[in-house]
Length: 236
Image 1: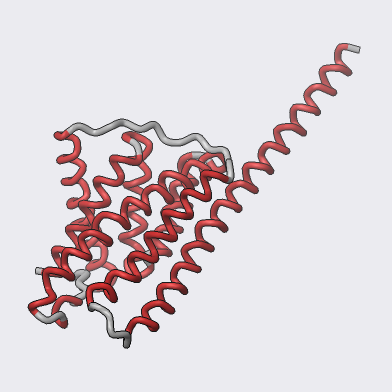
Image 2: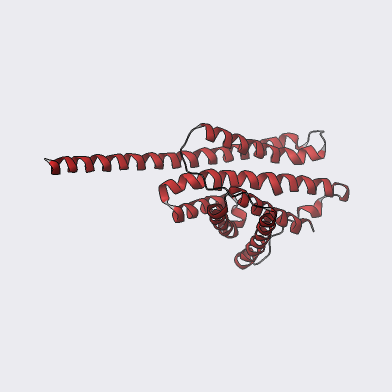
């Protein structure tokens, strides 16, 4: 009788475990589908908006800022909506960095940029440089430069860290474990930055490890430093 009861109990536990596992997988699929649908839609809206304002008689700086504003708005709204969906996940432990730690994290971001540039050179035979500033009139250089610093250098990396390391990574870790979730998140992150595929993959691995050790705020600081270093190399 006791053996029969124990077997029945173990069967219920296995059934419950399978149900929980299936639910977590569904949560992961829903999370990936949601965020990448938002990114895809925001890309379409950015393209359409750029075409609409390209020949419009509006201030040139507004034309430059509109696509970045659209992307930032979509990503920020996506995070807000996702949090309201109540998809369960265990967030990474946050450790507020001090002034010295912020400096070291910024140095890490710059070092990762140098490492990424070396990977780019090894894979493609040249160092990354967009050369976008060469075509900009001198009078527009600094306004364009500071707009790029604000959106690409600060806003974009903050939102990317909130989404990839702050939301997708914890949900994936519930299903796949640490190593596989790092690989998945890094693959998705590199696909989003397909022009720098290998270096973006390596950078994402570093950010995932940093998130586990020090939290999302640390990733934001390093990512901001990385992007600003990239902008400075392109500009000067």
